Length: 168
Image (cartoon, rainbow, N blue to C red; front, side, top):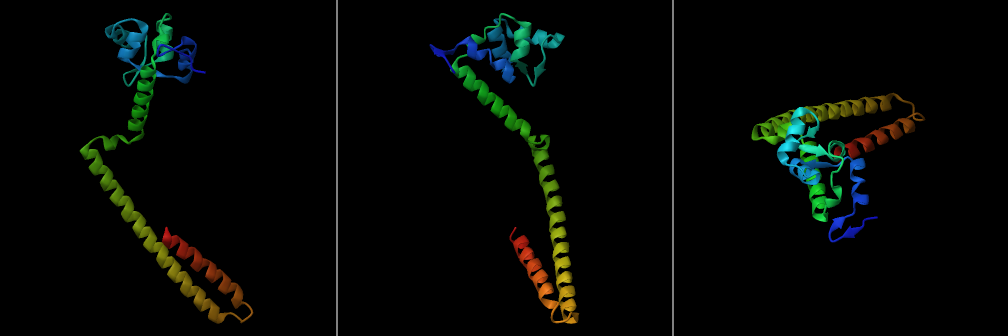
């Protein structure tokens, strides 16, 4: 249950943030801890705080600064943090190679090779189906009349599967 008072979330709600492993950028962490950005950076440099891509874990901030004032989160802070986390996650989900023009060119080159490979594989599979169709037709001529319905059912099933595969 969210409780608001003049645009601020009560600390009982914000105390749940560390359990969700929320992160703060360095300036927000400094503001919440009531210290300077330089002090936060010093703690990161000396290993007292760990930074992950320039962000500080709320749980570690609370360990380093027990009197950290998390009740100071406004709704704007919470929404900004959600937006920042989503943007970072979206950027992290992309391959590193997509971060530059050269990377994009490498990606296009790799995808062209993959496409050529799969086109050739499709061509081989179509040839296998044609060969199989020819062998089944030859086999049909050699079977007795009472055996042909079974072979015809198998042939129809294969043709149906082949047609559905071509639609993909």
